[in-house]
Length: 134
Image 1: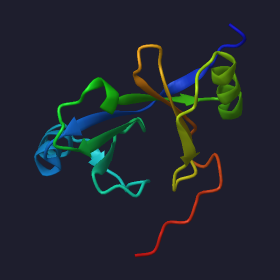
Image 2: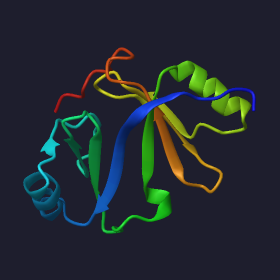
Image 3: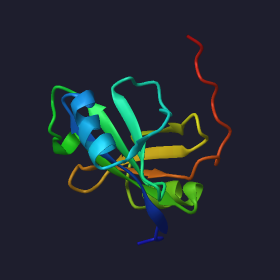
C-alpha cells in the first residue's frame, strides 16, 4: 500500500430511528447524552454529544432500523489532505466532501464491502460556511 492513514479517534456514530422524540427519551433522558446544535441543514438529524466529545447522530427515517447502506462511522484524522491522497492512491473514490458549520471538513467513501465510511477533522479545521438565514 502506498500509505497508511493515521486515525485519531471516533468522531461520531449514527443510529437510524423511526421517532426522534421516543429515541431522545432513551439517548438523552435515560443515558444522559446531551443534545447539541446541529451542524447541517437536515431536520431529520439530531446531534448528541458525550462528555468525551464523541457524538451520536440520530437520523429519523421510516426505514429504521439501519440498513448497511444507511449507516456509517466517522474517523477523525490528523492529516485530512493526506488522507484524501492516500484514499485515492488506494483506489477509493470520494463520494462526497465538504465543510460543516463548525469548520469540520469531511468526506465519505465506501469500504470494500460497500459500507459507508467518513473521514473528518476536528471542528475549526476550515473556514465555516455561513448558515442560511430563515
